[in-house]
Length: 234
Image 1 (spheres, helix red, strand yellow):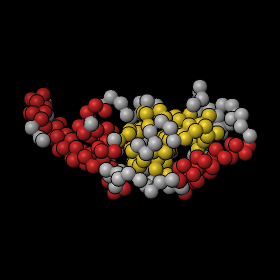
Image 2: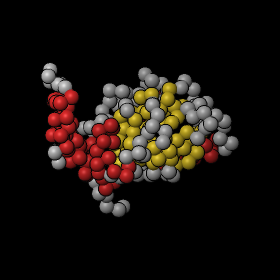
Image 3: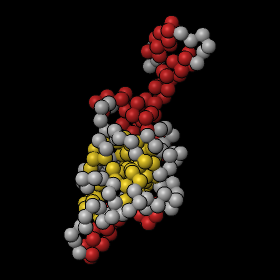
């Protein structure tokens, strides 16, 4: 396995910040990523108060509107193949699962069984344009971003390990995902270690403005002063 430019500890550290903060820091570290690399539609979230998750992606595609057309044995083999793929890692992973149906979310892949299975295989959660159900029986602390739907219809695995697109966020196998109740963003591997310093800079620059804005004598003149001070922080 090629040497990674980050460690598990680096990824765990990024969970101290929400996903919007990660997006802000990426604007400094990787300016070309300012307009893409993140989800652009709202999700239902299984655990809105849960801390962010961060890990390498396991990518897959599903359909549910119609039967797969495969034999029962072929469907079982595809499902086992998917599970084997998810389990092949040395870091906790995040599933990026694209629903290919014309109406994504027609059938829920995620529920009591699959959340517990995937958690047991070392996954932290999933970001999907598809759906989930069994809200009271989802594996604890297994985060899900998707849509809520009561039926699994004919849901089946189509493929895995290939690039997918989730609400405008393109994801490749092993690409780092950071996700929370706001949505998700991908992080270039070489940017992981640079983000904490960028977040520290942004926090210091914003603190000057926020402190001034909360003063009882705050006005446009004070705002101009705060913005000038913020610009001088490097």
